[in-house]
Amino acid sequence: MPKSRLIVFLAGAALLAGAACAAGAPNADSKTPVPSFTATDLDGQEWMSASLTGKVAVINFWATWCPPCRAEIPDFIAFYNENKGQGLVILGFSVDRMPPETLREFVRKNNMSYPVMLVGNEIIRAFDPGDYIPTTFIVDKKGFIRHKQVGVLDKATLADWFNRLSKE
Image 1 (cartoon, helix red, strand yellow):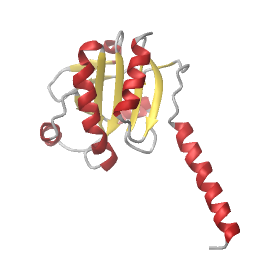
Image 2 (cartoon, rainbow, N blue to C red; image 1 turned 90 degrees about the vertical axis):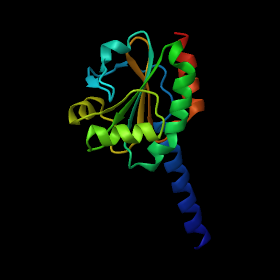
Image 3 (cartoon, helix red, strand yellow; image 1 turned 45 degrees about the vertical axis):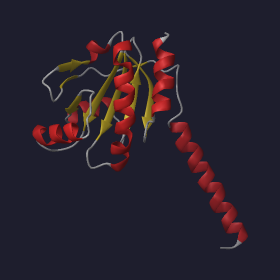
Image 4 (cartoon, rainbow, N blue to C red; image 1 turned 135 degrees about the vertical axis):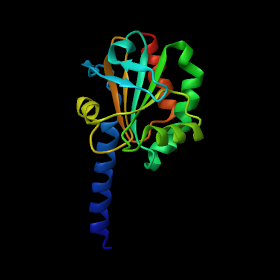
């Protein structure tokens, strides 16, 4: 590849990488209310947007067939187990199209300790996670979305947001 084409290619790649990072950058000043929803997890417990008030909530849109989604599950499990007693809620909103029993088996095999539920188009439209999963929304104690992460969300980022929002 000629040197000038290589420079143009690298510059374009840098711009795209910067845009991707900016899309996932924290927006601590966001005041978008969490959409109103009601969903029932695989254990039969009903979850509503109103039930999140007073807690820091992580709402993760994912699917069993999605490799990046599966990659972040261990961090979600560990972080949830460490912090559920301190006001953390993680809700796994599966966009799979499968019977609940099949999803329940996946959750069991992967030792997923946080609530998981199959969600339909109504909840997907309400949140508008976009075209890619995993997509995660972090909601503050007052019910406002403070961060939207498209792509894998790691434990360090979860901890940063949880610690910040817990103090508010």
